[in-house]
Image (cartoon, rainbow over all chains, first blue to last red; front, side, top):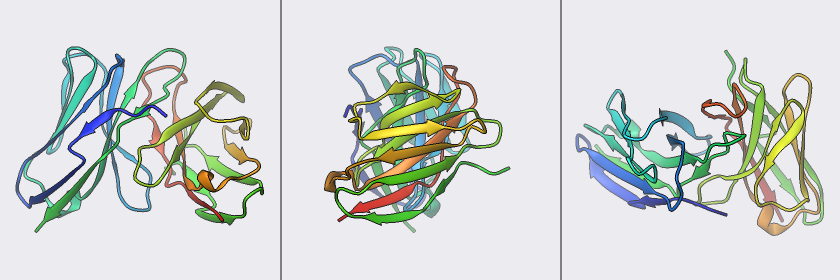
Length: 112
Length: 114
């Protein structure tokens, strides 16, 4: 099935460092979303972006909807141990449903 | 306020068997989507139900079928199970079909086919 290109695949950082990850697509999306998934749980919505160029923050998290509508990035500032998990981007093509196409995921490990 | 709930949490089946997974949407939500997440990959869209009808379907064979009930809960059925059907099956609900309504996911059902 179709998946978005997400990078990096994994990151191993020290507590307090900033993190950046991005997602690209060959198709245009109407909505970009970022989810975090912990082991044994479902994805939890972090940020939703609805307009090209939109920059949105949620605490230490900041995400942007690319101008071309084919990319998005997520930044995490001052990382803490509980930031550990897998981060997924997801794009919504629009139309009749809110079906999502997910990225390949970024595994984040934070060392105290 | 209960979120999306799924049952069972884990399931082991044998090749060729049939399985039914269940989902109750978040309170106030009327649209249910199902996703399959293989190990190490992102979730893949199976189908979406709204007003008790399948509204859109991903690239999955007819062995995968579903149903939505009047109370908005949903079932995913998989017939003639294959080893490759082993995955985490996620249910997601949203508030308005077709609108900018973010999906909220349950914790999934881990299906193992032996």
